[in-house]
Length: 267
Length: 308
Image (cartoon, rainbow over all chains, first blue to last red; front, top):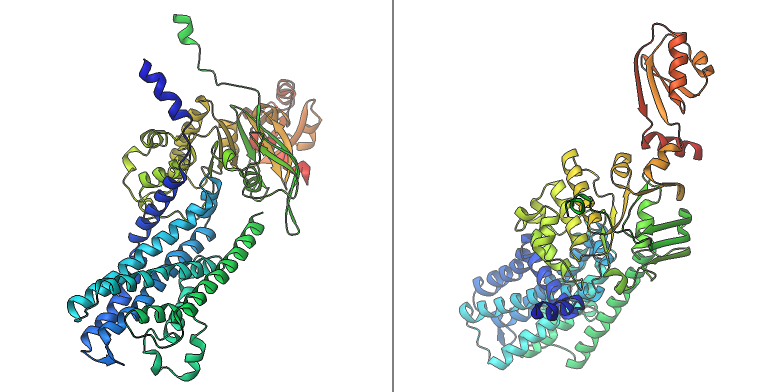
């Protein structure tokens, strides 16, 4: 009897643990996307496929002083991180918003930050897997030899890029419709990738595109990653970081405007 | 002891008001969705908001859930702001939703929502109440319409809330699935929960509700028990086949209204006995006599017609 009376009040006064909510939210957001082949396969497949085709199959070539198999890890790494983060946040947010699921969540006591945090965590996980797969392919089949510290810094730099692109995803997700979101994402994703020199070495791009590139976040992220393998082409490190932070803040501002607009439309 | 055992289970009826809208108005741009709305939800009762599509039922629910802010007046739930986190831990909601993440399993959805609440039901109990035990490992996208609604119902109750909002819970369900959900709602009431339900099925309000508020064009036009609402219109309907012209029938004492229905006439009356006596004396050939109570549907039609 004594044990009953001591265990009951503990259960009655339990509070939901915010950390536990965030953990579960992130876990299920990850599982949800992992089981969606349209997301999990396509965000993984394209960077890997490009790397295999242009890095491994085309044979050993060099860009500047480094081999293509090394050069393409930062390039397609940026491409992969950007895709995983944009589709992971924008497409799911637009769907949840447009079809009422976000409202069901908001009516529950779930803290709203848990919802957004889960998307960011999910994007970071998929980005990490993307980058690690590229690195592994390069080391096993492409003759890439990077010191452990360099490799670690390269992975961390690339994966940190999922934060600005998640912010961009939120901005898009708040303005795109549930069915149009993937198309809208591609309208930004593909041209930005091209103009930032992710598909073609930056120095080969026409001059006017090079001038546009400095305004594009994938350019800055890829340059930071290129610097890790000694292939940086322009600008000081700090400038690239500042640009990414500034871009993130602008995107969060746009997302906030979208959030306010939604609140107004719903009441 | 034997006597004590046959006493039926009484629902706990603390007479407190758990949710209240006072003079609440809500505009969406130029559209007035709710106008001077006064509404109370009493503890332990099922209150039905009944009205045609677009009457303002869902808007009222959104205000009570803190998903929308009133343009004027006030909304309180458990004496507090419905948008506050502490209020929301005592409230569950089943809303109309277009798409639920389809790749998560039933048990995973419930596990996640249970984590939001301080004292959730054990997942197995939530599954049992919603009749989902066999579907725990099924992905949401593989469920039938009725099963999907039951999952949304499970998400509303998994936190063991004191107050439940069910927005059109049985819309699109077949008769069997609807009756199953009704039974689940009745079980909740027996456990002392308070329920607010919106519906445009009159039968549903009649079957479940302790009190009904009839809404039309953003205002409450009648409120009371289902019986009180029904009594707002003529008490009985007499249907019969007769040669008598409508004008003659109308002159019989106690007749309120006469309408022709295919080969027969339908007479509304508060005093069916004297109307029947009159009919039988005037028409010896009269046949096919049926006397029925006017349903909630008649009351509802009459009430919304008065409005026009």
